[in-house]
Length: 406
Image (cartoon, rainbow, N blue to C red; front, side, top):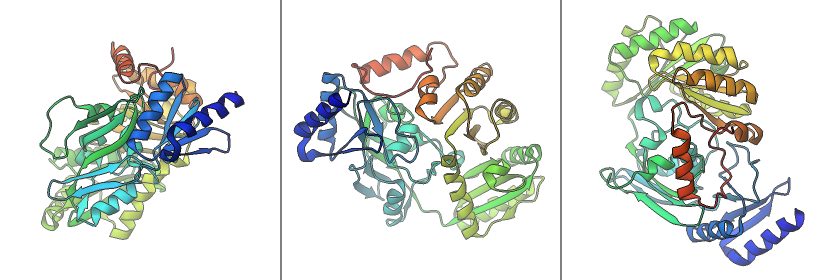
């Protein structure tokens, strides 16, 4: 095995030359960092021809780089922000750009990307590939709703570009929505174009503490009043670093609009909503963003907003205690902690009977490979995903645990 690894490394160095950096991890795994799209395509084409198994990595701070593979392809050298176009409300960047750097580049032009992914150090490609949305999903939609264009190098080395650079371009096959949340099953994302918004003039957070049932009821009261906040998040005591459950309401927009919505929300809710000072609010949301990576496993359960109580009961019954945050508007329950294959599988199958799909967002390879990121809860889904994987990766070289192992 060691000899085979040395041979692969030698052949890649000869093939790519200065077009990539190669190094070994502490565990001895070969990691290849292409410098451009062409080198990425040549590497995957050769891997498909040689039958080398390939694992795709971003920064390595979200999912552990422990999947079975002959080599890991990292996008860390694809780190250029190509353009911030405030007139067209788009930003284009390579996949290895750190999200904080992208956010800063947009802010320098008075622009804002309304995505607050879980995990503190993430690359653009990682956020898009995993489709991991944070609290702002309530007001601005999932990651796929922000992706206007994407370039992907498939498992056999083809370069596919899809989508447009402007918001109005929606013609053709919607590859961006297919790639967002595909967990690297279809290829390496090399660049993306994302939707921008103007930086909001006002950004205000309201918070209440109490029992889960009381706060869940208050959230429904806010929605029933016709208010859709930028974020409406229900947090367990562990997630909120507090003694009780928290309800956090984030409002963004113009000064007058935010002030009026604040009054409406406070009037609609049967709990006392207190305004957080801006610095405290920033720390509050940042702490929630980084909390998931304090634990080895993170998963999300999707349901209707009216079924959140049932979803929370299922999580509490099947999994050990861990931080739980709930995006009320889209009906997303995210749990982080230490769970076994058996515990998560039982929860997935029980939730599937109630049409609540469970997505395994991150976990050690032993769990990912056994369970897959997705668990089909409707007939035919597994066959469809399998057909798509064969289209994008006909040689089957990409190490991506998408479906549950039979």
